[in-house]
Length: 603
Ligand code: GTP
Ligand code: SPV
Ligand code: MN
Image (cartoon, rainbow, N blue to C red; front, side, top):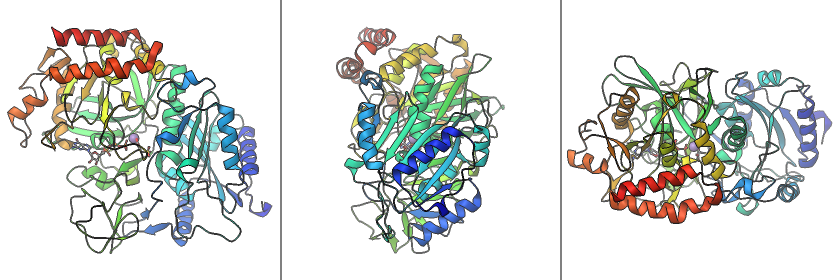
């Protein structure tokens, strides 16, 4: 390495300096840059990316388009590892390799992998800097795309190093795109990454360490997000008695100004961002956004669960986002936004399926090829994304950066279920709600590259790809949380499903109309909702939810009914296929809930 280009470390933290030296000796970058998180740093990197042909400037102010390699468009679940010392601690739902073995495989890949590239050191905070709940991470990466995205998604910079001080703890996050350059070679405008079988997204929970190799995309590469804030944090949270969840956080205000805070866990691409930014169709009600993807929740001194959003930006699904479906997201992405794998119009604007406007031709698809109307391939990749600062969202709640978090009144679980699961059900108590969370099923979406989209799989608490330890222990952790405070202080738990289908079409219009369901949930929290007890839980009476104009009374009745046949099939699948996976780790409380459900359905 050319010592002229080695910038001096702007920290006295010995552990950090040592780690950076160790990684640079292994990966052999041309130069090291310590990131300061400044706008000028962002501008300089973006300028370089434009020069290299990696970023395309758009007509939206300070906004850019990136096109990834077709093999690098989403998370890769089959290449994601929880490498705990014992296999049992990773559990039956995670990929596991013994840590030393995985490290030795990866060290071979990391050896010299940054040749010809710059190594960036990104100090970042998940959560407001200095907050009790916040955690500091440092990502080392050889991707300027990652640095620019991290600027938006997390709090990056010198203040983080100040907070870290000489002896502070941080979570080391090592990332490389896995494409060293030979002497004189450049990327030539092509997205660098390694082939699928060389990609590794690895987590060492005991060491609180993340090693990612071979992918430059989203959750594989922006290591503060899924890797730190969910997989490593969930394992910390279990040890320390708090919760790190794949949940949006919203603030709901009724016409008389009363407010409730609601968190909701839906699997990837199942509507978190949309619900977090919802514009109610019912007069007088207001939704404001606290977070759209991740919630960290701890008990406050008052015995209530308080949640913070550890992120600073949105990494949102582009297709389907329109002025109609999500005007707040559309406003959030007017400027200062990075787009990945969307389509490009001739006047340098962006377009995607479901944007609500006709495409302007000529249109360039996410491969960079001319796209014609009627093509059997979409112009934007189904997992195309925008990266935008949360502060740009018109609906952002004033308290979204409150270091103390917001007190959670209700937690919703849900997924994409074309049948059986009704529009909304309330759990009778905490354990019943934990049961609901543990059995969530959802149609697989394009958010994971290596899975077959469309088929239903169980995705407990929307955490299947994100739980950093044994999922059976995670169920137990949820049960235990319910014992930490009095029942009246615990959030009320609900199961929702916006995705019921009839003749291939959604029955419920969703989006802003989901406010009708939020209203009922609000009323239930106040003890004022119209409700009845059923075999599967507490449900709205037939007149409790006002009809949206697209929905007939008959249709609403149908999606609010208990489908006994469907639930019996569900029960059989849980008993035979889902719960046995967890063996002895399955909490007895959940077995009990399953038995109770069976008894209710058969009586
Ligand atoms: P991740 O960022 O992957 O975690 O996704 P997410 O859970 O935030 O999902 P998002 O809100 O981005 O929605 C994903 C897709 O579902 C988009 O195409 C939305 O348009 C669509 N969607 C969201 N809410 C609804 C709804 O209420 N009804 C229907 N039918 N579709 C919805
Ligand atoms: C998800 O898949 O749940 C996402 C996108 O939020 S990614 O950051 O790529 O994981
Ligand atoms: Mn997500």
